[in-house]
Every structure is written in C-alpha cells, then in structure tokens.
Image 1 (cartoon, helix red, strand yellow):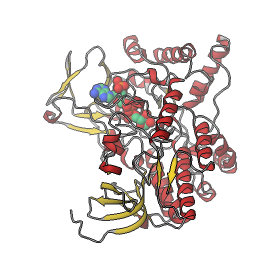
Image 2: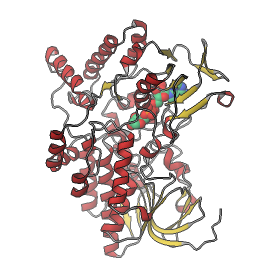
Image 3: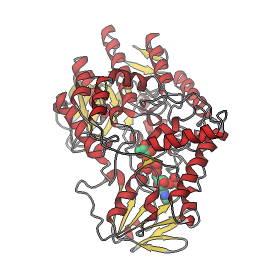
Image 4: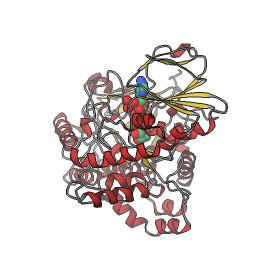
Length: 537
Ligand code: NA7
C-alpha cells in the first residue's frame, strides 16, 4: 500500500454504496453542497444487491415499497416488473439511480476502507483505503448494511472438500451451473428458502441440511399489471404515508384485532385469506401475534398445518413443521413453492437436530449418522448481522479506542445513529434502530435525512463536532431492551437478532422493536429539542 499521496480533504466519507450510501451522498453533495465521497469495496454500486446473486435472490418487500421515495422523479421514472423484485432488477434500479443523480463521479469502487482514526485535536477523521488514498474528513458515515458480513460456519474439514463451495452472500458473478450436480445446501433461513426451489429445479440431486425448522409464507409472486403500476405511481404519496406511519415500513397496517379475542372461525378465515394474499401481510393479521404467546400459537399452528398439508411424505412434513420458536420470532421467510419442493424426487431433507454435522470430508458432508456425497456445497448460513460489518472496519475513536473493543459486550448507540466516543461518526441503520425489523428503504431514508439535517444545522451554526454521550446511549439501550422485552422476539435464543448465530458474539437484542413510526417520532423530537443527548461544539 502506498500512502505517500497527499491527504485529500473532504467534508464526509461515506462507506458503502447501497441504498444508504447513495442517498447519503446525494443529500450531502446535492442538497447541502458539501464535498462528500463514497468508498465502495465492490466493483459496482448496490451493496447487498451487488453481492447477493444466489439463485432465487429477491426482495421480500413488495417492489413499489422497496425504492426511494425522496424524489418524485425517481418514483415516476422507474417501473418495477414483478410484485417482489428479483436481485438483477433491484441492481438495475440502483444503477439507474446512480446515473440519474450523477452519483458515480463521487463513488470510488474497488476500494475498501482499511482504517478510520479520529483526531481529537482537529475533530476530524483520517480515513485510509486499501488503494493507498488517505482522506481527512469531518464526518464518517457508515452505510455498510446490516447483513453484509457473510457467516461461513467453522465446520471442520472444509479445506479437504474436493468439490466447490459457495456462500450465498458472496456469489460468483458468472453464476454457478448446478446441471447434473449433487448439491448440498446448509441453512433454511430466508436465503436458503429462496434458493432451494431454484437449485432443486436444476441440480441432479439436492440435499437440504436443516438445523432449525422455519416458518415460511407463500410470496405469491406475479408480474405487476399495468393497472397496479399506474395505481402505485398515482398514489405514491398515500403509499409513502402508510409506509412511514406504521410499525414495519411496509405499505399496510397491522390489523387492530386480537387473535385471542377473535372467534376461531373468523380467525381461521383471516389466516386463510392472508395466506392466499401472500407475503408479510400474514404477520399483520392480528395486533397481538408478536406480543402474546397464545395469540402467536394460533398463527404458528395454522402454518404448521399448512406445511403438513403441502408435504406429501409425513416424515419430511414432520421435520419441516417441528418448529421450536414463535412465528416471526425469527425473521419470517417468504417463498415460492418452498415446501412443495420437498415433493420432488431429487430433493432430500437431513434433520441436523437429530444428527448434527460432524465435519466436511473430501466427498461431502458427514453428520453423526452418515456421509452425504455432494459435488457442490452452498452455505446459506447468514451473516454476522448488524454489528459484524461495522466492527470488522478498523474504526478508532477517542482515546484510541476501537469500535470493536467498545462493543465487545454488545453494541451501544444512541438511536442507532451515533456511538459515544466516536464523534462526527454516524451509523446508518445501526444497531439500536428499527432497520431489519422493518422495510429497509424508508428506514434508510429517515436516517439519511436525520443525519443530513443534523449536519446542516451544525454548519449553519458554525459548529464542527457532534457526539452522543454515554448517558444518552445507556438510556437508549434500556429503551431498546424494553421494546424488545415487550415482544416475543428475545425469547428466540438462536436468532441473529440476538447475535446467536455467530459463536462468541455477545447476546444482545440489536434492532429497535418499538416500531418504525414510534422511532421516527423519537428521532424528530430529539432533533426539534436541539439534539438532546448529542453534544455539539
Ligand atoms: P439466517 O436467517 O441467519 O439463516 C441461516 C441458516 O443457516 C439458518 O437456517 C441456520 O440454522 C443455518 N446455519 C447457520 N450455521 C449453521 C451451521 N453451522 N450448521 C447448520 N446450519 C447452520 O440467514 P439468511 O441468509 O437466510 O437470512 C438473513 C437475512 O437476509 C434475512 O433474514 C433477510 O433479512 C435477508 P439455525 O436457524 O441457526 O439453526
């Protein structure tokens, strides 16, 4: 690395060029007139959607809600083709935005940030990249995504495997040809559940290694009709209003009825209707599904029964429906004929709860019961979520303290936006914000706008440093914990919301479960009262 080149002075360095980094660049550069630069390790923009190219990859949010709403022009000019957009279409959309807003000139691709050190005498960050540049920036803004640090489990023997293996989050751009291959896939989260039907349709044989059985809801994909496209454009303001005034950031409200208080026949009819409707609206059937175990059980039992009805082999149906956690206690996947895939002759299911994986061998995967020979292994094993993509960056704040060290017992932030001891650093959709519990684009827009307003107000007052306090962050962590405890979510001990999927990671519930609309109100109040909990100097 050559760092002898002159240090370039900028107002802000933004790490990452997905939804968050691109809008942050546009806001700082084009709305506030600042000198901002994006550093992106990929060879193209798109963040999550640049990396996750696995078969079947698509978004579980409906396309007309999975887009920027800050610009009327962008809303009107882009047209989605399907109810749930596939990865290539989302990547095309983000490239369209990069061109439409002329963002590319300030996005440096193929560049990873290797260090960011806060200089206490200047209140500025010194950012170093693996391409040898150094930037002296007033603000450091992380836009690294919540699910971007691939988690490949440390299963013994992986280096002995003679076939090919891939993690879904680091998928080869040229694709993988499964034709005539025996494939093993580990993981039945949202990703595995999307990939399994598509791989099964191509492979000679697919063996699914399931550790925890999972609920999944039918997505009911379909191309969008011209009528719907017109409706979504015409009513974009109303749609946005719904998205930003509810708990989840989607374009629907949670039903105000209680599942428990609703008569069984009406409840059943509601579930049937939502099941047919497809997607996350099932989760919004009743208000108490995520707060009351008995209410949740009514939904969980309904889905279990559906699984057993779809899967023809009762033994397989039993393994798939023997789910040990409340419905939506983990992120609920939505699927395209996932359970139906187990009726294919070329698909088999291995229950890792009764026989865990022992090791990977030269020929395949060996459980405590038997060896399964495969040509290709697909790891759909998720991510070191929410904190992983931040702590792997060498970020050093006040008193030479690294972010990794500061968060060694779990993340601590104020509103998921700032970390004490890391002045002038903002974390878009950081831990402690609703992020992964809601539809991402509106939550990203809200963060970008809050950060941009904060910077704008600082500039107007001639202030050069903003830093949240320990006390404010501790108070916010208590609120994050309170909000989580009011739901069933923390009861699921093996969820990535708690960091449980990464061995050694502190078990702290990370996203804010108090709801997106409520969270927005809190953020707005903090700003309107002069940024309480944030010191500006
Ligand atoms: P998830 O939801 O973390 O799912 C990972 C899956 O991999 C899950 O079924 C895990 O089982 C399984 N897994 C992880 N490690 C192992 C090992 N060592 N052995 C066997 N099975 C394992 O990741 P996804 O990529 O599916 O989804 C992440 C998010 O991306 C998703 O929620 C959307 O927001 C988009 P476990 O349940 O831990 O027993």
